[in-house]
Image (tube, rainbow, N blue to C red; front, top):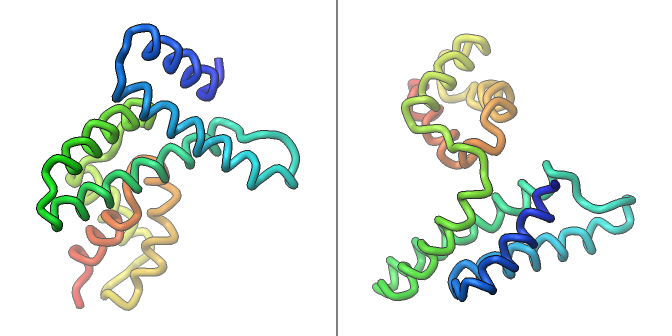
Length: 151
């Protein structure tokens, strides 16, 4: 069963169970997937599971940004709603790396690249990004590498 089929089945289950938040979140995920498929239509068939995960990660990132915006605006009600949506979305993503796990991977990439200062961050990110793809936010990865490299 593909990830898209799983989302559709779970949407039906949420509708039958009357789970409003889950239903709304799954509908928005499926709409984002449908839009990505339309945007990509010229390149052949629909999205594979990697493409679907990329769309879901984009939606999760959007919710994180919305949470931060709502908190800055002092809107706890909006923030709570986005957090609930994010929790549902994250159930479809691979396990995210912890900061400690990122530090270990970043140290290995720094050693592999032979980086000695912040000017070589590009070389480190070139090695590290493929290893953390889908498991950590690129912004967080970059932040960890910057902390580890001397200025």
